[in-house]
Image (cartoon, rainbow, N blue to C red):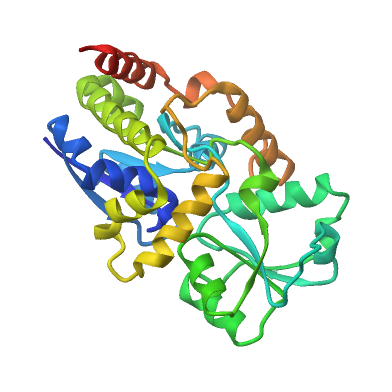
Length: 309
């Protein structure tokens, strides 16, 4: 069965997806998955609502925003990232970095999604720093952000992977802090679909969740070099050494979910971050935006398969 999956942007952060694709876990479930990259920030939601993709990968904030503004529902059914995947980079080395170092400084934020910035605001408040004392640049996307930083704009830059490793390796930036460690465990990215598709195609969704769980199990027992090799076809322009370094950094901080079940405490924590940042205006029910049935059945099936002789 051919299945279109839309991702918000291409990143090593989404390694489980590419492990499932290139190690054959989707194929083992009879799924011919084609991954499309959204052309803009609203692309994942638009593709799901207009039917050009069956499944979307992205943050819960997409569904929370849609529910908050329009009352529409996109339901998340398989967790992928259990940590924030972004990093704070500095222009100069800061071996004793403190969050108060950002006061009075300019940070070029990741502009591809609002959640990294909202997590940054949450971390600053937790460390007693008023975000109003920090100047955030939020309108520079992808290569433009990197070019601006390299050209001397701002003292700090927030980026994901592989951009972080490339900048550090080239001596253009220094790692100040991992936003994954600073934010703490949070269901940062997951797979979502319309309620109608979940109801209409439960077997397809279950097979998809089983493939993701198989990829998660494979990642859990693999080293950075093996994972970097597995995802290489999705990142042909990224040198192997950079891929491996990025994967190793993500592994050390427990970036990837070990099973696809998106649990309620993480949902509520992320909702608190979005509420505090003014991104959403009201609370939304976990039961309306998360369906764990497919993930739980995938885990049960996977555990049974693993236990079988």
